[in-house]
Length: 171
Image 1 (tube, rainbow, N blue to C red):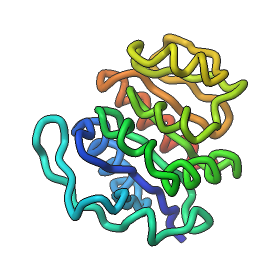
Image 2: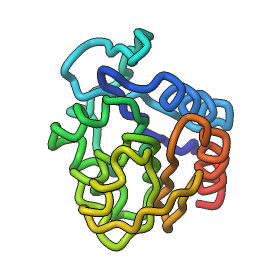
Image 3: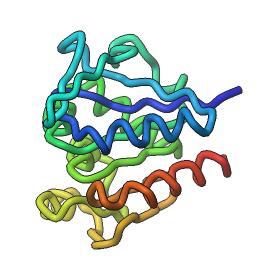
């Protein structure tokens, strides 16, 4: 049975940070699903590209998923405002399932209350938020802390995707 991974989407997502992991997962045979907040029938990236969610967070259960990817851009600032999103991320992370986030994505991890005592990276613009949430910030292209995989910026996408696939293959 194929593993099912939620890829979160909202307006102002970063096109590379969402689509590259989404298609890499599909390329490896995983069931990647674009999961929206339910606030719209389609979302637009910072660059104007359209994404149509395949399902709303309101219609899914965390127990049916093997992981979540939280892309960056400014979408995470919108995503973190939905309790369904933060509860979904919290449950997956605390259950030891894949929880991957890049760039501004860790804003959702802050609001999901999963960073205390964890090692993470992110774009330097939000490192203070990460530290204030109780995490240890490391300036590396990717940081792996058990089931939590974080990365800094689009230039780190190759190693970010490689570590996500590696984690899923070992589970």
